[in-house]
Structure formats: structure tokens, C-alpha cells
Length: 380
Ligand SMILES: Cc1cc2nc3c(=O)[nH]c(=O)nc-3n(C[C@H](O)[C@H](O)[C@H](O)COP(=O)(O)OP(=O)(O)OC[C@H]3O[C@@H](n4cnc5c(N)ncnc54)[C@H](O)[C@@H]3O)c2cc1C
Image 1 (cartoon, rainbow, N blue to C red):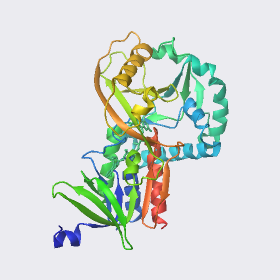
Image 2: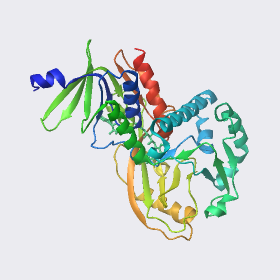
Image 3: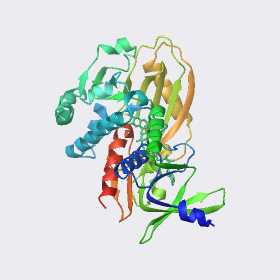
Image 4: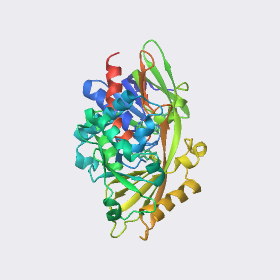
């Protein structure tokens, strides 16, 4: 039951965006920049963003050699190039928009550890092919061998048979980045409502009615938007059941600061199924979804013993052999996958739009996807 005042002033918006992850916030910022006089509202079901954007590893991801080679099984070269280009432009946009200091962006180096089986699959020989493919975008070789660094970084040589340096990737501080993105949205005049779970939407001739569970009033509250942008990534099926979006849980742990840690930068291994980095003198490691795809195809933010043990083993045996460390914190986040690694950015009707399915590399990509979505909304 709404009051007259609420009805008059608090429920109508020009643009409503669902989801306050990187994509939702970027979309809201883009819309507000284009239409400063328009009212733009972001609805977030959690008190904090509750998907992947606040729970990731902070790689400014462009893609490692084995991951990009894997794409060739489901994507054409042209599609891979487009995705790579979006990531590059997205990262540039993010850095220009927020500033490197504000997001903790640094380029401390990015590497991929190759195992014996990677070597046997001919990964090293395919570096030249990938460099050639990406050259029109990177304008320099994206990848080069850096085997001399294996011992300097202290990695196990039992596992690490080669090290590939990625010259196009950096890293950032996920928490700082998300805070800066929120602050920018607020400064521009975007409204953000948290604890606002959208349960359904309904399109009328005049507006989209966006229904939110309002626990304090024990009722469903309907807000009205001239347009609705759905940026709910792994949770999209709840609102758009027909879309090809499959959730994938990512589990992570971080150590306490380690004295004399021998490396900085970000690292990939096992076709991207494991990744680790240095942050604040600690090691953050995540991955292991491939140990049990079925169990990890979930939207539940839980940890499993199997994955956590595997992460610890990688730390102990490959990354920090012989170095003592203590684990400080563990968490999980939820990603979104589909038949290909490209995100879905599209118009569903005259008033409803969406951008989601950001895979395991949405940090660099998110700003560009937000811009693409705002382009579509603007051209309606
Ligand atoms: C453990 C982990 C590590 C990762 N590491 C990296 C990395 O190092 N580099 C990289 O590039 N990418 C990484 N990723 C992927 C990256 O974080 C994602 O691709 C990106 O954050 C997706 O952004 P998004 O805005 O699309 O989705 P999300 O950040 O998931 O945002 C969607 C938001 O929508 C909200 N929402 C959902 N349904 C509703 C609803 N009905 N009503 C209201 N709100 C709703 C959710 O609460 C959520 O806040 C990682 C992901 C995980 C989980």
C-alpha cells in the first residue's frame, strides 16, 4: 500500500538497472553520463554486491595462452578477437574513468605456469600463432617465454616446465575498484538501493513494472522504469529463464602476509582452472571448479572440502614449496557461463535490455559491456 507521496515521487524512474556488480554500475554510469537529467536507479538484492564483482581475484584479465586456445573449440577466431578487443577497451575505460590509484591498478607482470601435459599438447609452439592472431589489437607480442623466472619466483620445477609471460595483463584491488565505481555512480546522481531483490518484471505500454520483495512492509513493491536493464550475471535465469546462463562457483583463499615472498603479479595455470596472485605480501589462490563441475554448477556461496584442499595443495607443492604460510580467509563467488565465452548483451523488447554471462574474466570486460548495453538502451 503506497502513500500519495510515495506514489508521486518515489517509484518512477527513467532507467532502472538490476544488479550492482561491475556491469550494472557501469551501465548506470553510462546512462547517467548520456542523460544527466534522467533518473537512474540501481537495484541490488544484497546489502553488498552479491555475485562475482566483490569476490573475484582482481586480475585485469585478457586471457592466458591455454584459455585462449581453449576458446577455439567453441568460438571462431573473429569471435575471440572481438572478445579480446572488448576486454582491452573495457580495461582502458575502467582505468581512465576511475584512475589507477583509486582502483589499485598495477602491472606487476602476468604469467602462466605450464605443466608437462601442457608441453605435450604443444602449447609453447602455439604462442606464435596466438601472437599473430592478437597482433591487430595488441600491436605487440602478447606472449613470450620467461622460463628464467621459474626459479626466481620459487615455483616447483617438478610441476612448472615452462613459464609464459603475458605482456597485456595487469591487476587491481577488487574492493577499491568496486567502491570507486559506486562512488562515481553516486556522484553522478545514480540512486542505488540495496537489499532490493527483484522477483519479477512486467511490461506495460507505458513502463516496465519492477517488483521487489519489501520485507519491512511484508509486501511486493512495484517500481516503474521507462527502461529496464538486467545485469544479474549468474542469477539471470530467475528473471529471464530462457537465456543460456549456467552458474559456476569460484572458491578462493588468501594467506597471511608471507615474509620474503619471491613473486609479485598474477598467475594462471591448468587452462585457467587455477589462478593465484600476490596482494599486500600475501598469496591469493582460487579455482578448482573442474574437480567437480556438477557440484560447482550452483548459485550457493559455500566452500567445499575437495576444492579447498586442492587449493592448499597447489600452494604447498607448486607455488610456495618449502615456504611456511598461514591461511587467513576463504570465500566463494558465483560466475556465469554458457555455450561460448562471449557475454550476452541484447535488447529483449522495446523497454527491456540485458548484459550478463561474463564468465571468469569480467573485470576488464565489464566497463565495455556496460557501454554496449547503454548504447542499445540509448538507440531505442
Ligand atoms: C572467485 C572468483 C574469481 C574471479 N576472478 C576474476 C579475475 O581475477 N579477473 C576477472 O576478470 N574476473 C574474475 N572473475 C569474474 C568476474 O568477477 C565476473 O565476470 C564479473 O564480476 C561479473 O560482473 P557482473 O556485474 O556481470 O556480475 P555480478 O558481479 O555477479 O553482479 C550481479 C549482481 O546482481 C545482483 N542480483 C542478482 N539477481 C538479482 C535480483 N533478482 N535482484 C537484485 N539484484 C540481483 C547480485 O546480487 C549481484 O550483485 C572471478 C569471479 C569469481 C567468482
